[in-house]
Image 1 (cartoon, rainbow, N blue to C red):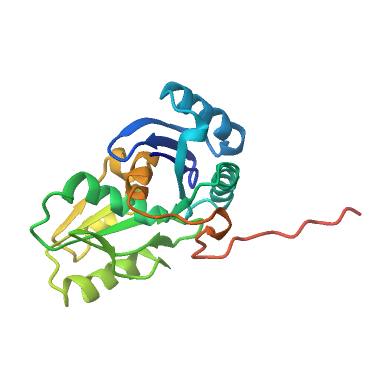
Image 2: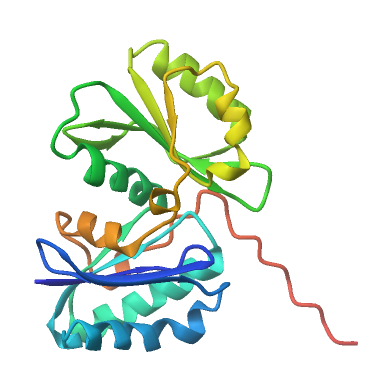
Length: 240
């Protein structure tokens, strides 16, 4: 079984291909929201480099947001097209799940003896952030709804609802940390880790396909973008 993963939810471009055991190839770079121009081209390059025929892909993993509304639609549209063409399922995975799942896959899948929570952060176009709270134990499990809120409100929520009542030992922050590093580091949350390396703070399709291995997937028409906040669509101005 070969799985193709596509993430175009930010200005970074990431595609990967794997079998059920390992990553076979990944392309990742900053293209500045030019996803529509390059996506099919680089899927073709990736498959040629890994010597995999498109018709041998048996599942597609696609990030569904939150993130860039335009980028998400571009990636999902391409994945739907390939899914319909090959009659294969799509696994739609939240970008927040990808960030949290990456921490579990690379650090805690074998051993997680203490009760940890992970908090992925994705910057929105406003002063608020997209986020959710996850437990790391035997796997990773989302404890909260997907949220859009301010960093101060998030810190207070974590302190009162998770570290205070549920006795979690540590919390890991990951994602768009550079914008909020000082506020988090100087907050009343003490047992915290802030991952400030791009390896884990950026979305990687290689993590997406690892997560997609264990998920059944759906028909292309059933996978929708995850909009925590509705897209802001401006009406066209009439020519005078």
